[in-house]
Length: 268
Image 1 (cartoon, rainbow, N blue to C red):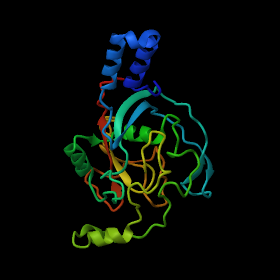
Image 2 (image 1 turned 60 degrees about the vertical axis):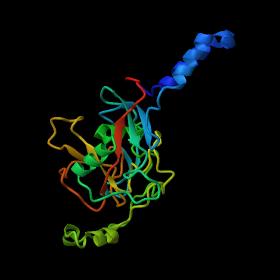
Image 3 (image 1 turned 135 degrees about the vertical axis):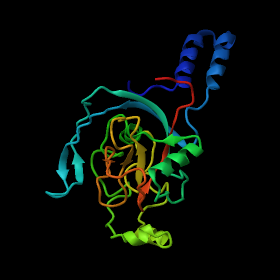
Image 4 (image 1 turned 90 degrees about the vertical axis):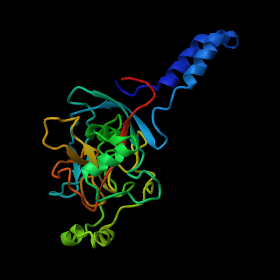
């Protein structure tokens, strides 16, 4: 399908094209234009519209690796052709990680169930895995939100890992101090360049993000998936999906963001 023009812009242009020869005298055209201008915005102000095609099968071929045995790819081959039928998507996604407020720390140590509940309490929902991936890759299906070549910036990635104390993490009395000791995430909105072509920030690195796998793969035993990686030396790609943790898992680098259906009456 490709990117779809917003309904208000498309209809406004059509009205102007037909009415241009006698616009001042054409009351019907002016009325139609006024009606178009009153269409609601597709997303709330703290969210971004993603309107495009998700590819279920994007080939990832590493052209330059970080050492012979490293799993981090420094540069991916430019293989943009989709290996399966495209799936149209149109939805809203939070501009930033929860709580989606610039300057605050991203929320971590939250289960998949808690993330889903928090999104629902403000009229949103947890992002589907495929929605999250499309928001990160953009229409060019990039492996990193900014391109094909891995960089130490603009995203918060590749910090030296700090060994964690699992007993201190489990104990509520010592948990906050242990998370603070391990903390290498940056405040929300710190990385202007870590942005996808749709205008969504920090999808790679900073904190892992819960996604909902139920609608995308109902036969899978994994309802909870994690996307994007975090600040450590991990893959941090747009297609990164971790399925090893159940929905009750919570840890020092696990956060989330919300999605929602678009609200301007435009159907796919």
